[in-house]
Every structure is written in structure tokens, then in C-alpha cells.
Length: 345
Image (cartoon, rainbow, N blue to C red; front, side, top):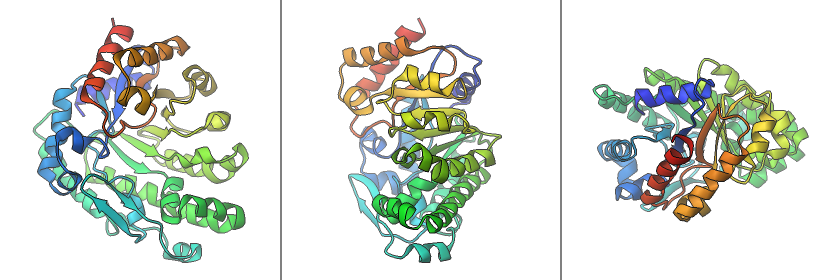
């Protein structure tokens, strides 16, 4: 992202600016179609990938894209380190498959090494080449991203198998989640080390929303806190667009800076529950409104958020999730115009 955009985001996160920022999470489910190329071209051609991301900033210069210049392969990067099969198609993101081995074997295998295993070394190489390309521009990679430990485990084991592990073999499940937590930390750290100006992390993990408050505190909270604690010198954004309303009291002590939450949650209630512990990023419906809605729908969603906001500080207007595949360019432009009219006039 542009250096001044990063500073705008930081000022909002640190409650130094009471004018909401506008930020969107865009990645490979949306960008190849936007640029008019296949997913194969987007993933395999460094030049094409850079050109697509540069065009994004040229066309939407007023919008902050999070994390910005994101090298990702759908959900496949971290799970690929465990050796599972990945299915590729020219018109969609790659899909990792669960690993056909026992939980005990996965524990004995230990955490993958992000500089050697799976797709992660290739991503690091791309970041290094990208850094060289961006040195002469006003763009920088200010934030890197990783799937969280429960999300990784759910792809390696399968969601149902992971939840069964937790109920039937909680001790072994915790051992495996310790491994995926360490992988998350290691993966974020090597990305930071490969670049020069990283000041933020984006952690994506929706699986915590599948847990009761009691199970969340036992199996999820300590892992998330361990990750955020490791990167306490960074701006930490936590993306979880699952149903977590009954977990917000437990989440208040998470050492994060920004919470990107579901469009199905009431903005005002989330703000009240958070008690000012984090900035909020959300929560326009990404499919029904941002992708498929009219100008009237987009305006109504923003008005609803504006009416629910208790405190104008610490607000990042965004989708309650990533930008959905097929979201029209015109809708993103309308969103930008309506934000300008409603919040910045």
C-alpha cells in the first residue's frame, strides 16, 4: 500500500483520527477476474501478479487494501507444509485437502519449516522479488498475513475431524494445535524478515466461532494470545467473520488492535462489547450488498453502521469478510463515493 495510506490506517487504529478509514481485504478469489486473467496466470507470473496489484491501487487510490500486495494461494499456503494434496483450477483458488495420516503422526512430524516446506518458500521468494520492484515506488508491503492455528488445523485434519479430536482426544488435539500455532508464528516471522518495512500482521481464523465460550477459552484463546503477544510491536488485525457474539466477553482480553468481524453481527453491540479495546473493521455484507446490491443497498448498509456507532474513533469501514468473487468494480466505486458522502463530507 502507499506509505500515506498505512499512516492513515495507523492513526485510526490508535484513535488519533475520528474520520473512519475505508479498507477492503482483496485476494485471489477476486483479483484475477478483476484484471481479466486466469488464476494460473495470477499465481505463476510474477510480472502479471504485480501489474494486477498496481492497477488496483491506480483505480482505487482512496481505498486501503489489507494486507496489500498479498502473496497468497487461497487457503493452501500453510496446510501445504504438512504434505496434503492441493487441487488447482484455472478459474478458482487452489483447494488443500486433509492429510491422510493419523493425529499422532502429525504430532510426531512437528511443525513444517516455512523456508523449506510446501508453498511457503515460493511465497517468500515472491515477496523478495516484489520488494525489489516496489523500492522505486511509493508502495510498500506494510503488512503480512497468515491463517491462524485453528484454521490451519481444520484444513489439515478436516473441520469435523478436528472438532472430534478436541472432544475425543483433547490432549493430543492441544499438541497438534501447539504445532499449528508455532507454524503461524514462524510463517509470519519469516515473511517479516524477508521484507524491510513490515509494521502489521493480519491473522485470519474463523474456526474459533465454532466453539462454546468454555471451549474457546481452553482451546482457542491461549493460542491467539500467544500469536498476538509474539508480535506486540506490530499492528495486529484479527479477521474472524463467524458467529462470535457470545465469545466477545472472552475476546476482550485478546491483545489485538483491530477486529474484522461478520456482517451478521450488530456493529453497535460489537463496539460496546469490545469496550474500546480494539478498533473495529466492518461490516458491510460482502455478498448480498457489496457484490450483488444496488447503490441504495450500499448506502442503507453504511447508514445502518453510522447509526449504530457509539464512538466515531477507531472505525475502519469494510466488508464483514473479504471482497467476494465477482464483486463488480462499479460497486466498489459506489462504496467509496457513499463513504465520502456519509462520513467525510
